[in-house]
Image 1 (cartoon, helix red, strand yellow):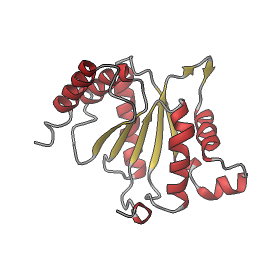
Image 2 (image 1 turned 135 degrees about the horizontal axis):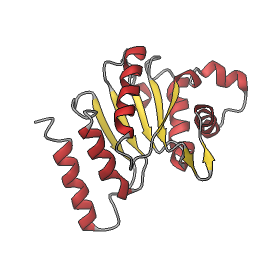
Image 3 (image 1 turned 135 degrees about the vertical axis):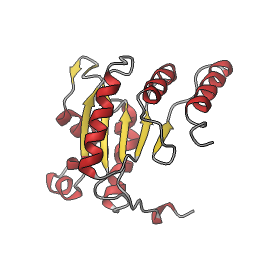
Length: 184
């Protein structure tokens, strides 16, 4: 498959849980910049960063998240950054993955962006989190109706499946119980 020829012709919400972490800066930001530069994504696609407002002794804002993503792209010129058009597509929704009360707020925020960006509920949840948090996040996303449509709600896990075989099996079972039945 020629990945350089892939185009996403419909707008999506890319929901990045753990946006303030190193993976955003080192892996996701360069890839997102390339996708935007090469116009591989629909122009209405949006990136929604989700993380605790207070993280590593810092109070994060949407401007901080945009700067964090920009740093990862390696783009230093303000003109080049503006021409890319990525900044207008970045949003920040503070939320602690362990706080179940933050998920209805996230759902409402995503629904608002769905309407504004005309994504029709298409969401890619990128979970850039330690393995011990994955169960909590997946269950909360499912319980709040954010994983109901397997054609439009995709979960991407970028971390290992835990430190043990048993832990990996438990996570596999959770994924199958919360994600796979929706397909059947």
